[in-house]
Length: 81
Image 1 (cartoon, rainbow, N blue to C red):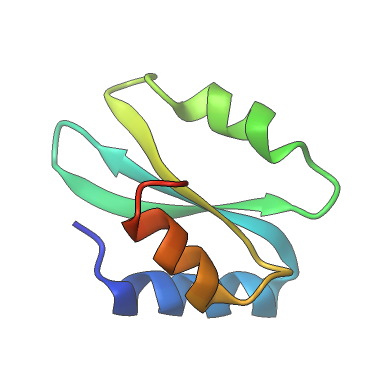
Image 2: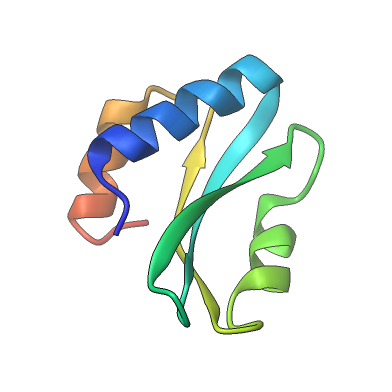
């Protein structure tokens, strides 16, 4: 499972690469979480739908890289992602 440090590192990497969103996915077969970056002009929900439930993957959270991370982490931890 991704830690808060993992998510923070992925968030910063996405910002540095010019992405618009970070989707955290889980590989159900290996139980590993990993990042997927979405371009600023892509529909993040359409991208998430292409991955969620495919090949034992599931979307755990979506982060907007144009918004501060901390409030978004609080929402995810509260189940509002």
